[in-house]
Image (cartoon, rainbow, N blue to C red):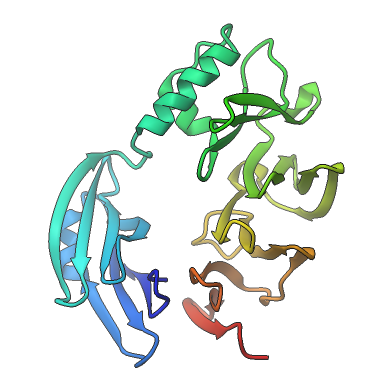
Length: 295
């Protein structure tokens, strides 16, 4: 959703004989009109083996940033102005990983001070740490002769502590973290089971559990505001047919939302008044936009 909730950006895959290309555009929620900004022909210019968009960011109410992978090692970052419906800027970055920022460097420095016996490079921090905006990082060490606990680094207060103790066989089982204030929802997988563990002032407790084919593919995405939190737990890559799980976390607690068996993705407008739910319908992905203010 755009910051003002008037537009919804989207992508769709166009299958060709030897590759896949991704188109991108937006939906005007007031008029129902769909506009394609990046068509398949133009998308092909950015492809080595294929082109796919793995990140969408609204820079403002009228400008969208698409990160387009070439299916190999490079990414094109394209910025479109929807008042003109044309591309206004373009740059290239290497690979698909997050670009280090001053915040990443500061966290890596604090990590090195907290755990001097672990020689962790910045790239390792980016791969292993889960950033919980604005200033918290949650991670598992995943190093030989180290504990397998889930740790919190609090940049604002310059502190670190254990959020969840895990046994020796718990290496690499921490998958994601969601935060609401000073409480955390940790996604932990082991073998064919995923557990959602709530850690707050009452301690740690499991609030949901479900099966998965491969827990290492599980991840979660936080939506909404700091105190009115929505989050999605994916059991596999979003393009598969494995179902995702959608939750709402507010002052009343955490509840699982009904989405249907083919639900795979969601987004929430900044004001929390609109939900976009993505599900499979035959061999196509369908987007439903729901007004949460209507009963």
